[in-house]
Length: 467
Length: 66
Image 1: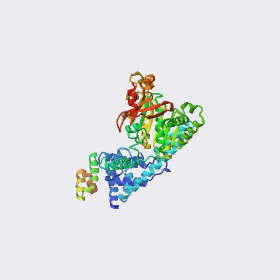
Image 2: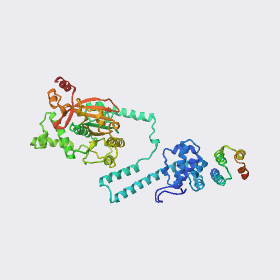
Image 3: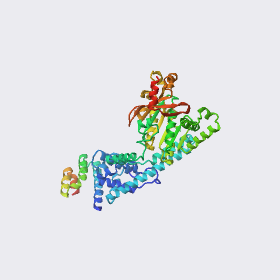
Image 4: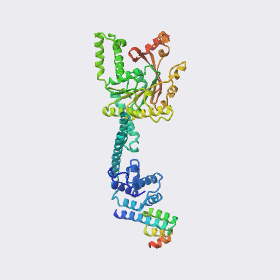
């Protein structure tokens, strides 16, 4: 290696003088390595000789060896570096005082940040000009990823280590806010008291799985929760990989029409909504539309999205809507897997779920991911889903913070349910909850209106009594 | 501070010269490493101790310097 060799071209942001100053100070004052080791990486040095010297310094530091000119000189000789003396003499002459260290470190960090941005832009340009480029959506997603990675703060462990005082201070502030009613419970309430009671609200950064057999009502429950959240002015982003936006819109309207039925007002049935309405029914339905127009719900109904595309759209939405409170995805099995799928399906699914969990963490929101269950449940007498049913669909469970199963008796035994009076009775089975208890809560499913409502205790007793 | 920098510069040049002597066979590997160690401890030694240590490590080099 030529000791003065510099990477790439001279148009890149760099400051060789600052590099020499930093290295000179660290060799002369080895105790200062502590101050920079978690912030400065070898890639912050453009000159390859300087980079190698910094790597040696770090190596000696980690092995608790002595950091000195002779140690570094001998390492450079052993690696065949030309003119190591010339390289090191330049370092001895590079600085005047210790106070130069911090400003020079800041310079190197800044220059490296600029280089990463330039490199990402160069890569994006090459991708866009490639005649064999992927489709535009994939290209845009990839470009977003590159820019995001290039602009991520490269802060080291000094940003990650928190002392207990800092942590408890934040916990205390959160407690005061809840006490004063400034925050809904501990997390995001979905305004189903039984669900909120189990979860104390869905937590930011959490991945929540809502799994069930097809047509059990996952999408209905999901949309009900979305609407309830949005009614409080909290933006929600919906990825619907199965139904298009208009179908979702109709479901939301229908679900709200049930409210008027509950209030004893003139009813608009699902059939009438989908066919022809009387003038009075039309006016009522218009009212529902007017109530719903302003809800901050955004829908992405493009099919065949990959996780990367979901991530890109979610990041962009969050940047435009910093108050984003919830992301939902319906459903996992319709997410397009990555192209190079040479591994088992379970591992591929697991990786997709892990990336979505990371997305929830990055955007600081809860993310509800619907998942279908395979037919394994049907072979059992008790068809209530269990964790093993989720495992059959892939490595999902390990990355989830909450796993909810949806189950209805009347799905499998409609006549029996009718006789017992348990028709429409739905169980939300909390099979896993990292920050709470497991258990079962009950809701009632009004199928015609794709609406879930709370099942009161009294109703449950009546239902049981009717058996 | 300037003196400090000159001293460091001199150390590097000295090590480099000793390295060349090693390559020429004028110094053994053991002597060379001993000298490197001595230079790293230079701040701890006065002139007399330094000369004594150097003589102990390499008589030939000590005579050359004096």
